[in-house]
Length: 326
Ligand SMILES: [Zn+2]
Image 1 (cartoon, rainbow, N blue to C red):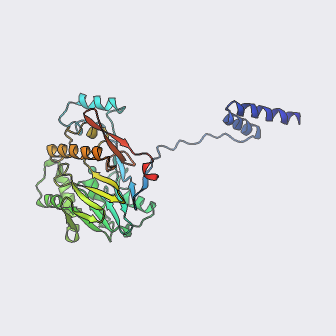
Image 2 (spheres, rainbow, N blue to C red):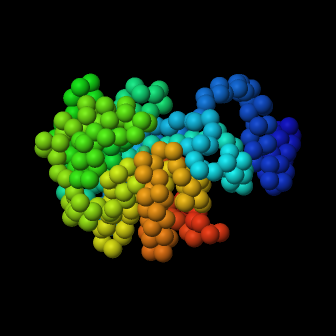
Image 3 (cartoon, helix red, strand yellow):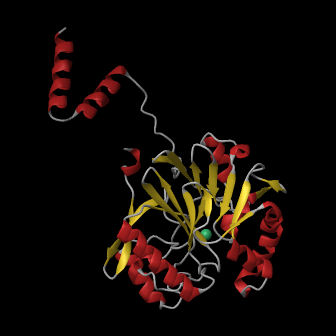
């Protein structure tokens, strides 16, 4: 009995000293429990994030990611490698970076609207997960009513087709008119030759039954197109509004949360019309920061929802925290 009392006293003393965990360890040792080391299991990423926007629900889904070895010359295409490395370092980043691919699904209560189809499955081991994650999130591919293609690049159209068939068999596809016409004309820069072949193979067959929008055109009530030409000749962003709550799905207006937002005027290798893309970037960053409109950014770090603030002659990306859960 005296022994038990001693133990209790030791536990109480440790707990009072803020050592509740130590007390637990002593308990485990005394009871003879095995202390096996847990195996290392690698990075575990969040892949699905759903939140409310007025009467709508919005789901961001991580189709995948890649880790390019160097920002330059993709970012700061018209700058020196040193200038780009300096901005990376000032933001606590190395030259190696990560690009996320994040389509947005909106449930308006009447329709399920998917913005972009993600990468083709099998393009890389770390991409092309959208369809299976849509199911994980609780939706069937057959339930998707509309797929809006912001622009014709591979990471946005690739997932329209799975095993030769439409991935979302009941969906109406929406293209920007200028964008679709650009690819149909078939005059592209050298770097987009493979992309053109892919657009013809994957996207053009949807053209027969598709809807084509001009800027300000409406997808469904509460969702309208915004001119974002430049990254590709006819890219569109989309403005979503429900019960006074707003969200800008900006597609590839800015493709890295530091480089393209702090230095919006810098040329980006992926941009098809570089001056126009930079001008669009500045216009939309200015609008997002002035109006404090939250943004869903296809290539922003997952969950890819944030705000833009003016800072130091440029802008900065401020990830959302719990604002949308309240
Ligand atoms: Zn993209």
